[in-house]
Structure formats: structure tokens, C-alpha cells
Image (tube, rainbow, N blue to C red; front, side, top):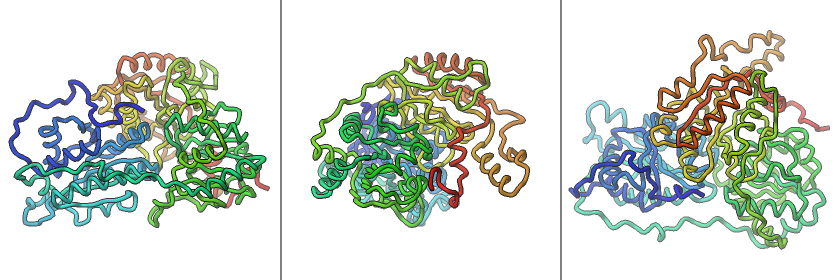
Length: 602
């Protein structure tokens, strides 16, 4: 992991305050000190009066260091930034949202983080709980009786302390709970009056080590023995990789287990890289949905080891229904399931369910089978696998081919990929080669998550690269200013088909079902006449920007130029004009109806 995963990192010379004399202690000073004690390295925020006291404390009491504030232009981007940071480091950073209105702005991004099961400590604020202390008009608008109710169904825990001692306890609990598996955001709402309360002295702060987060549960020895026996006796074992850790040691043990068992392996594009996709045991290209090769592998298996899969039940249904194979499901995810959201997905069968993080159980199973630690992966240059006509117009295939030709010698992390991405375009050989999607399908997340990942990857030698959709970019483009301000390098390639194309596919299906003109599917979808100059929008925020480009040759040259600029510390955006289209498997799966017959099913 990167050193920026620990409190204390800062950007030299950027947003450094003048020295401040010791002139008293305030409630918000205690909050700032607690954030430092709890090892929160950064807080992303868009300013707001409801936390003016805490803002002052972060600047003038703790000197904008550990944590350092990261200014964002929208609350949604602040949450997305913390999300991207967590996907790399597996550690929480802080977010501060202004009152009920800021929380409503950030709510969709919080839902993304919840569905993606990432840690994040969110601080909110409210106008005075005591009505007698409220300013006319605005304090009333910015005060809610139960502010946490806005997001309670998709955070692990929330609280609204009204005293300094209660705030200390709430922050400690929230920081612990967000780090415990399964991870998820936590939310603490701070009364403005508590923040601005003058104290006689700084209270003694608790040592967080005395309030340690609970260790992940360990399966029983009998369950581990059963899993090991089933797998060792299997003639056609199959490993389904889901939400796995970014640890190279965990990665190495997964490979060692698969090789020892001769187990076939499936990964997907919804979650980060978890197994080398060019390994002989890896069945087929990773995708958002199963292709026929993946479905056939599930049907052929006699033991399936599912490792915290996203929608295991849906995968098995797509492959043909309840499998004949014994299913070992390793996941603690049920602990977060509730009746508000259906992010728990379809009910999955399990002949044996180990309720713990998947890598923890995998190590125990490997120990029981006498399997060694394996060989940790190395940081290696990118391994693209497609080529295309250099002079033809860009599509999802030639875009990937142009990227591959330009980045072949670079060690990169693919931060985001669009829905239309062809999984065969690129091989992943390290847990940081690809970070996964946004979790909840909330549009506008990509730019902010790219900035957060770039923060976490800064000075690691890895170049953050993202392929963003044009709709996602346009909704979230002001997140990129934060990267320009804090000098966070990356290469963002906008796959710009000038359409909300996902919905064109859906409109095409409806038109065919109703025997209506398919040619009308673009109406209310196309982002054209006039085209939007996305490169100009990025340039206006201080980024380097290239484009538009429209051929593979042009894009290859643009990516090479962008890589040179990024290696000099600059964030760069490329506007790549692509033809509308998805790879065929994706288009079919996106529009499949629940009643449709699964691919390959008899």
C-alpha cells in the first residue's frame, strides 16, 4: 500500500496556513484532534457554515495536517474522492458534508460506497439543535431533527452527539465500525453549537488502541476442514472471485490454491482485480455478466468456492439455475442486508457458508491443504491484448487497442472502465491493475473516484488511468479541479459516444417488443447538436487536455503525450470520440428480461 494511507501526509506548499497563537480551546478543536488520533489522513469537503467551527480548527488548531483538507466543488465529489481512495488503500479517509443540504448532495455517492463495501468516515453538521440559538431563516432551513435518517438505510451506523464527550465517543465508534468487515460508510452529525462551545481546557482524549476494532471472525475448524475436504475431493472445482483484498500476499495465496486444486477461476469487471486473467486456469474474459464460457464452467463444476461474490445468486441463475455442485459461500455480507435496498441481490444457495472476509478463510483452507504462500505479483507493465485498424473510427475495441499500444511499457492502475468495455481487451496481473466500478451504479462517480485513487497512488510509481463515459464525466467533471489544485497526476480517457447509450439499448429492446421503429431509439438520448467540448471543460479547470480525437492512431498519440505529461505530475484528460456501441455480450445481458432463458441452459 501507499504511505498516504496513514495520517500525516501532506502536499508541501499547498494550502498551508500561517502560524496561529494558542488562544483557547473550542469544541471543534477536540474533534480535529480526535480525527488525528483516529488516523484519518485527509478530509474531503465542500465548505459550509454548519461546520465553520470544525473548518477553523482543522486550519488553525491542527495546521491543516493529519488530517489535511481537500477542497472539492461538490459534496458528491467529496464522497466519491474518499471512495476512490479506499479502493486503493482499503483504509478510510474523512468527508465533511454541510448540513442537510450537503448530505442530500452527497447521498448518491454514499450509496455507491455502501454498495461497494468501502470504509469511509463521514462527518455532517447541523444548525443549533437548541432552537433558541438559531439565526432567523437559514439556521432553520439547515437543521433537521434526525438528519441521519436521510442515509440510515445505507450507512453502517450514524449518530448526532450534542456534547463534546459524546462526540469523542461517537467518532471513536464510527471510525472502528467503518473499518470492520464488511466495511461501509459511517456518519456522525455535529451540532454547530457543540463545535463553537468554548472549553476551559483540552480534555484528555482516549487512546484509540484501547478501543480496538473487532478482528474479523474466524470460521470453525470443522467448517474449514469440510471446505478443504470438498475441494480436495472435487474433480472439477471452480473459484468465483468477488470482493477480494488488494494485498499481494492474499493474491499469491489465491493463485497457489487454484494451482494446487487445478481449479478453474472466474473473475468479473464489477470488482477489482483478484486473479491473473492471463493464467491458464482463468476461464474467460471478465465481464459485468457471464458469457457462455463462464456459464458452462459453472454448470460443469462439482464444487464451487464463492469468495464474496457480488450477486452470486444472479450468476448461478444466469448460468442455468441451482447448480448440481456443492456451493461453499465465503462472505460476511449478510450482516449489512436490510429491507430498504436490494443491494443484497438474489438469494444465493450455500451448502456451507463461512461468514468471514474471503481472503481470511482462503488462507485457512490453504493451510489445511498444506499449500504454501505462493509468489506475490510484481508491478509490471500493462498487458493489453487487442489490436485494431489504426485509421478506422474509434469504437470500444479500437479505443482499448490504442490505449494498449501507448501504455504497453507503463505500470498503470485502471481506475475505471465503462459499461461497454470488452473484458478481453486487457489482462490484470496485480491487485492494483484494476480497481472495479462504483458499486451502486450512480452516474457522476467516475471523475471523483479517479481523483481519490490518484491521491492514494501518488508517488507509488503507478500511473492512474481511467476510461470514463461521457455522461459520467459531464455529471462529475468539476471533481477534476481538485486534482489540478493538489497536483494529482492521472490520464483520463473519455469514451465519448455523445449519448446516454445504455438507454439507447433499452429503448431498442422496447421498440422491438412493441414492433415500433428502432430508428427512434436515439431521441432523448443523444448529447449532440451542439457537441460538448469536454477537453475545453477540463482545460478551464487547470488540467491538461487533448482532443477531440477520432481514430486509433490519433488516440495512441494522445495517450503517449498524456502519459508524458502525467509522469511530470499533471492530470490529463483526452476527449476520444467513439462510435456508439457495446460489446455483444454486454448489450445482450443489459437488456435481458428475467423471464429470458439463460444462455446455454437446456
